Length: 332
Image 1 (cartoon, rainbow, N blue to C red):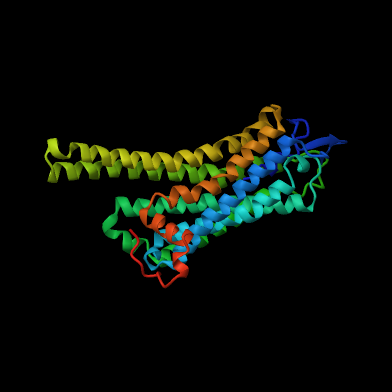
Image 2: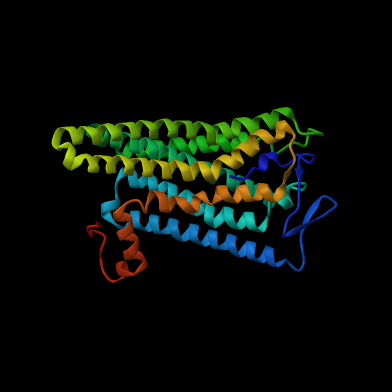
């Protein structure tokens, strides 16, 4: 998520950058580029390639293998499409038009990049929120899961999060046209730095935290119930404890990686304009790329956790699916 909304704080941001130099408040690429700049862009290109390849594997797997045609996997597919577009569109735009170059002079390409960045990053977050809701019904209400989470419900969930994404984008971009204000309008700052993050981050995070906490408590209760009803303490205590540890590890990974990637930049966007604290621009750019890297990590978190996805990936990478019809293969 690009913190575009905060970058008319001319008096707030200080800048030094390995790839840019300041010339009359314009950021211009240094010529020739420094070694650090070349290595930096090579690293960012690698992130883009890994993001594209990882999400392509998820998309091809869900489309090709019949076993993966489930409501849950369609939500993962929706997430992978959003993250794939981040890798294809947002990564190259963010490399070509650095945040530094758009601080004091925002051209057409900066606005285009901002639009894609906000839209696709919000779509990714809302997809994660929908997946958490799906997991809640699957674990906490397994007997009614198939009736409550049908293909029709999945389509409705995707349409709702697309509508919310459009609303969030409209609210944030509403502040981009400030020609009528000599200085930054207070209402624009309020909209962009408060309402936008609330809709695109804080509210989904609160929902996911509540849902995953409930899932964890239910998983613990189910593990203890199985232990008490079918096992003796000596034989099954270790298994119940292992089930609880696995549930804790999975939920901690899902939430931990998401919060690690998103919290720093959102707090920066929300708080800095109001506390008038100077921050080096490279720090802002680093936090922005940390946020974008979540799109690279999602396929590993939400797909590699499942053995059937790992089997599908192996068949795709090895080229086995091109040697015959394996769409109905049993994935272990």
